Amino acid sequence: MHLEIARQLRDHLAKHPFGFPMSKDELELEMLNHLFTKDEAELALNLKPKEDPPDEIAKRLGRPLNEIADLLESMARKGAIYKRTNRYSLVGYVPGMYEFQLKVLNEDLAKLYYALGAINAPQFFGAHTPAFRTVPVQKALPIDVETAPFERASDILKSADSIALADCLCRKKKGLLKKPCDRPRDEICIVLNGFADFYVENDLARKVTTDEALKAIERAENSGLVRQVTNVRNDPELMCQCCRCCCGIIRAFSVLEIPTALVKSNYVPMINLELCTGCEECAKICPTGAMHMEKDQPVRNHDQCIGCGLCALECAPKAITLQKKPSSEYVVPPVDLEELMTITAYETGRTYWYK
Image (cartoon, rainbow, N blue to C red):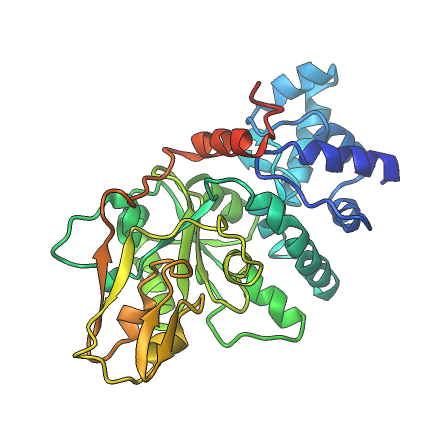
């Protein structure tokens, strides 16, 4: 692809509410050259985050419908754009192009995506309203407290129109970088609704039943993985089951110190020191380093704690329990992805498509 067209496409993608990586040495152009031919890039310059059918896109460009339809389908198959029910849209780097390369990821791409992740983090996580939020370990949720459907992983799955299981791209990437992780990688990430259909259609995931997805959740919790879901109440797209060594979201929050990287859950762990045996298992399992030991007793860092509940699950003497936050700290997510993207656009100033 011609360098100037690649730059135009990069600048076009940077208008997306979730942003796009832009570096001084233009590493992102290498990724675009991997994903787009010249003709595809020129077509992508005329796409937007709003989903459009091929006939509207062809009419807008003044080009034959069959020609545009074939080109759009080719781009979708490569994960360069997004397709849902025969409607196509521009997709950002995350969630989108990055995840859609699961099948073709190799060592060279892994190195590129690792570098782009750090570059993209301040842009993607720059909004006050994060794109992902923590869903607590279900076994640790208090049984005597009413929970909203968006707070329980099982309720999220039961309300989904479609569910698929995919391999974890982040742990695959770290493996290719010779830094393998011993946490589960195969069929551990859960893809939902429109994204699930897209993944299945493009051989990126296997369509499963709710029961199969619930088993994946149990497997993840037993392996000490943290659950992050698209920060919406209705029709979330992704339910990632993350580890602290591979996950870009947790890394952005705890290592790059971007406090808006993810929404914390509406629960906090409470410690009963009379029951505590000082075994340190809570500190070992904590994905953000929020739980640490002082004089053989666990102490929780409020700012670092994301309320995942892994410490409560790991605590054998049941000295740690989850407690619902007071109403003044309770966070209700945006209704759906459209509202989340609109909020993000205005919080980041990327309002090109929202004026």
